[in-house]
Image (tube, rainbow, N blue to C red; front, side):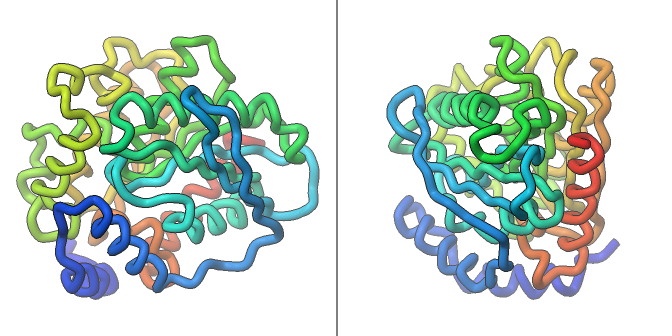
Length: 305
C-alpha cells in the first residue's frame, strides 16, 4: 500500500533534523525529537543500577499496578547501538507495561563507540539474569520472563535469547522483536535496496551505526552480532516479529521469523503496511502504531499467562 499519511508527517518532521556524523549531536537530536511525545501516566517508575560485566548498569523499572507475581519483560531500546537511552524510550516502556500488565525493566546498556560489540549484548544478558534472580523483590514472577526490543534493541533481544540458551541461563517465555536488525543490514535483501534512502533510516546511517558498533569486520558474522547467522536456532522462545513495509530492515526481520519456524520455534511475523522504521514508538500520533502496540501486548499476555 502507499505510505501512511500519518507516517508521512513524521518523516517530514524527521527531515527537518538532518543526520550528523557527530555522535553527541545525533544523540541530542534524537532526544529532542522524542521529547515531543508526551509519556503516558503509569502507576510507578523507579531508576536503579544493577551489576554488570564491566560495572553497574542503569535500569528503569515500570510497574503497571500494585499486584504481586506479575510477569516481567526486559526491554532493550533501539538507536543503532549508538544513540538513545532510557529517556528516549520511556514512553514506549510505559505503554508496554500498561498494555501488557507486566513489570518492564528497561536497560541502559553500554553504547558504541565508547563501548563496542560485544559490550551491549553482555550487558543485556546480565540484566536478564538479574531480572530473573530479583523478580520476586520487584513484585514479579521470575518464571514468567520475556525480552523485547526495537531495531538495535530487537537485535539484542534476539541475541540474548541465544545467549540464554547457549549458557543455560534463565528460561525465557517469549521474545518480542520490533523491526529487529538481525542481518545485520545485509545488502542482498530487497527491502534494503528499495527503502534505504527515503524513509528515515538510510543506508548511510546503517553503515555509520555498524562501523561504530562493530568496526572489526571479521566479527560481523558472529551470531551474537547477527543472530540470523546462527547455525542452530532451535530451542529458542516463541517470537512475535513486527515489521514495517517501508523499512530497510523489513526483509531480514521476516527472514528471521522464517528461520525460527524452520528450526521448530513458534514465530509469528506481523507486517504493518504503510509504516516506516521506528513507527512502533509513535502510538500517540500514528494509529497503526497503536495497533502494533496492542498486538504486542496481547501476544505478551498470552505467552506470559
